[in-house]
Image: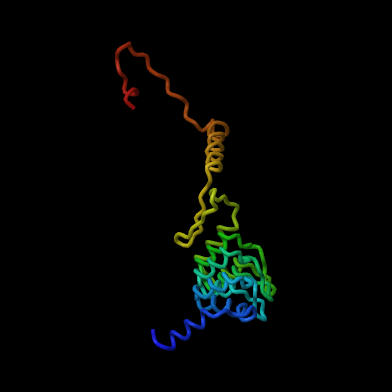
Length: 210
């Protein structure tokens, strides 16, 4: 480590005033500097601090695809549905800049897909359609559908899709509904049972081996 690096490192360890910290947090998110961002959060900086346009650290992380910083901010309680001066959320920014993993993380954290911006009245889904981003579009379309999550609320990104597991209860309901349909409405579709041909005791027919 050269002298300049040591000075920079030492500066990072110095206490930062509140006003400076609130400006430093979005910058750390923009640079993807997780170490500085983590330190600022631990010092109690306001997670919703924003610039003159109302852009928060979470929005910057989403816009620039800094997933580690985004996840850390979400885990520490950053508001995933906060809106800037144009009513855009972190989800809007992640969708606009084609960051599918950030979109998936925000959706998992409960980002509201129905929020519209003040520019053209568009949702994040509208922006994904506008920019023809297949992966982001699939994620947002899947999230709009009525779905169930498992007990832990886990969701994962696989091949550009938000994979959501059905809980046991939902699975049983599906099985029960299928049985009702088969036993009720589909009863007429069942083939008539075959009549067994009479045979003497002790012989084995071909049907017995099926």
